[in-house]
Image 1 (cartoon, each protein chain N blue to C red):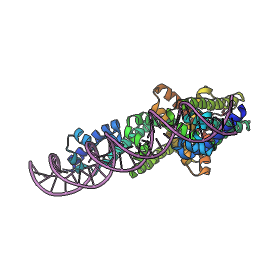
Image 2 (cartoon, helix red, strand yellow):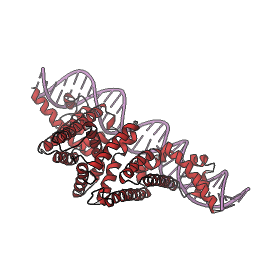
Image 3 (cartoon, chains in turn cyan, brown, blue, purple):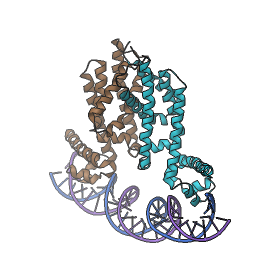
Image 4 (cartoon, each protein chain N blue to C red):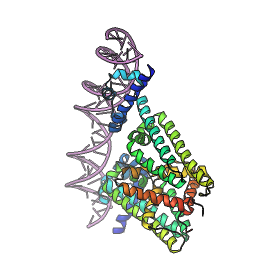
Length: 194
Length: 194
DNA sequence: GTTCGAACAAAATACCAATTTGGTCTATTT
DNA sequence: AAATAGACCAAATTGGTATTTTGTTCGAAC
């Protein structure tokens, strides 16, 4: 029964997700994954081709969860400014809980897996399209003034992505949100007197 | 003669700077430094206490060069907007030529040296004070509207610092400057219609 | 279709001898 | 006195080897 096959796969992915998050990709052994999933080690190979494919499934799962969280948070707002804020905050909060995705995008060793680059490119495109849509909506509502929406979206994505690491290690959530709001304020209003 | 002592020190630092930049701190040996400086290895210890102190001198030299370059570029402008632009561009160009400072701030191994953290803290303060002064001047000229100059300076420094790495590996200078100008534009004017 | 256990090659780890490196010290030279 | 050279040393690194672990395969069993 095909459904059962996918259920077992999902179960293995779930267990592997915890282990990878805790020990990292390299330090987690197939034996540990098998035991956590209550299977024999070689049974795992019935469901996944190799260790890398399991990691791929885990990372794709997390990427989809992040995309979903962002899409839902943005859809919950109608004002483009509130949408931008929702994007930044949701992204920041969610990434803290998606350890494997975060490490996949930062770890030089894991980066050597070809699918990570493809995943990253796809994910970057997703973010740019989210921001582009928000910016475009702002322009159409006559609220934003932007010459090149695509370029602006790219720059904003890069700028916020660049802040991930300082925020990832920071402990003070209130301080981070204060920084975010300061940055969003200058993003909306600029420095120049109106 | 004290002046000669410092001249030899400076000469050693100069040679070490090239070697460290080329081979990295760990891979560069004291023998190589001595040979490049045309001294015996043990003579080097007459001028510097150990390898770390040489590296410290190299990194401090580079930090001072960067500070000088930024200060001069900013002083060459009077308009706060032009000053901000000068800061960003100068910083970006200069860092590419200061390999040791760049690696000192990024390399986990080197980071374990206590003086690097002190140097970084001192350098961060320098940058924040440069930006604060520029912002404050803009406020006093009635051009900028900022509630908390210190906080804004902090956020701007962090935001631009976060973009270092993508720019450090990028090849296309024109593209980078386009991104910088787009970001500066939104920094000055904001997204909202005026 | 699913699982298990044995087997295997590659990778990782542990161990050890040899070499290199950073640093010290004394005697010599300038 | 300042600067240098060379011998020396402990710690670190390197390279080689033996051992163990790991990811994977395969055929048999359920």
